Length: 451
Ligand code: HEC
Ligand code: HEC
Ligand code: HEC
Image 1: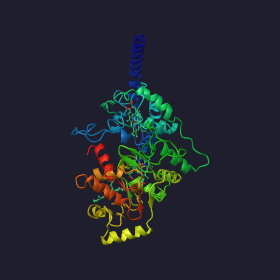
Image 2 (image 1 turned 30 degrees about the vertical axis):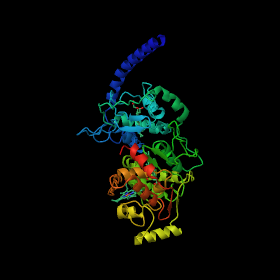
Image 3 (image 1 turned 60 degrees about the vertical axis):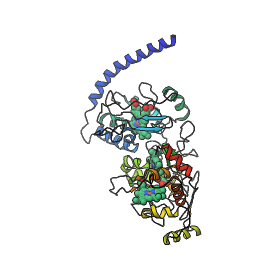
Image 4 (image 1 turned 90 degrees about the vertical axis):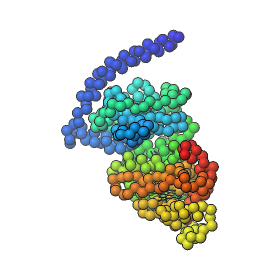
């Protein structure tokens, strides 16, 4: 009884303090909303913040899909940064916050220190611990200059939106946000990125962008039992070796020649990040959003720095093989071209896939990805391939003007067993070599997608 009363008094005191403070801050936030004249140092800082917000894809997570958080509100144009994007986690749906400078619904009352603490440590000003769906373990590495630019942009370069984001309601015990304190303590790094003097400036820039703002590891690094990423830089053996989120498998980005980037050049990686096309691959799944909202806007120098850093990662967790000169590869290409192949799945491929991906699996430049030697096709996990077959997909729309081609959904056309067969075929033809896909795996993904 005693502790309860005490804490009630505590809550009342905090609430009073917040009211007093918020009154003062409201005033300040409004005073700050005037945009500074073009060309001034202030305007440049805001512009820099805008670029960094793109590199970090703040809008990608903090903007609701068209139709609002429910997707069903007819004329609702989702305002950028107003939050409400539903994000699936193993514990339930988490909604992103409104981070526009509105003093009530958004973060207009945040001081710089509040902002930095939320973005780096995942703690909101009311001491509310944020779920790691917000990638603060990566953002902890953002340097002070960049953090100031981001703050300037969010306070003065973004339009306030007074609609609050929906509340996240996870079941017990995941609704006990305070417990995330222990999670952060155990798993989240809290050091700003430190450049390595033995490496080139380009390498350091790439490492910084990948590890901090780009939070590439949030998808591409496998997670442990407590949803923690297995490493936050190249010193960890599992860093960027492939991870699954929401049934999208983000492939191995180390130098593995099978399912990694070992056979993809720096220029091709940069092009993939700019336009969604590179080395005959086409972005699909959750990477489409990353290219559309974030990487397409990065400068050439930054894209090449990222590619340079990725290419420096030694091959780890190798998986799958590609050898287009093997006897079997030459045989299948010849047989596919003349149309007589006995392999299970070959008939399905000829009827449903060859139109776009071609009999020799080479696809069509800037239209359809090649499947021969495609590292994403050779991945250790097949979730992405199965999900793409079930839902279909569309290449990213970018400012490069390349037309975004679609892959149809095969949910109504092929059974689970047929999808498994054609994927097994694709993973083992033209010199590709990776484990077969089973009907049970397809069924598993389809059921958990509710399709
Ligand atoms: C991968 C998705 C993702 C990205 C990228 C992301 N956020 Fe978040 N952010 C979230 C989610 C989800 C929450 C809500 C977490 C919760 O409720 O515990 C959140 C919460 C926040 C909050 C706390 C607001 C509050 O008071 O509730 C701030 C501030 C914030 N994000 C700022 C940013 C900024 C700035 C960026 C870009 C540098 C960014 N976020 C990028 C997902 C993301
Ligand atoms: C939201 C999750 C997510 C984030 C964040 C993300 N990726 Fe990806 N990425 C994926 C998925 C899923 C794929 C597989 C689909 C494809 O190949 O387009 C992928 C594919 C790729 C590929 C092609 C790999 C291959 O073998 O085909 C590259 C290169 C890549 N990502 C780089 C990056 C970089 C660099 C970043 C950080 C700036 C990043 N990704 C951030 C999900 C993500
Ligand atoms: C109408 C043309 C078309 C047909 C038919 C088609 N695809 Fe695709 N496929 C695409 C496009 C376009 C993409 C890129 C999708 C994206 O960006 O979301 C793609 C992507 C893929 C990928 C991911 C590789 C990558 O790098 O993007 C795989 C695997 C794949 N298709 C397999 C198949 C299989 C198997 C079939 C037959 C059952 C098939 N496709 C039929 C157009 C097609």
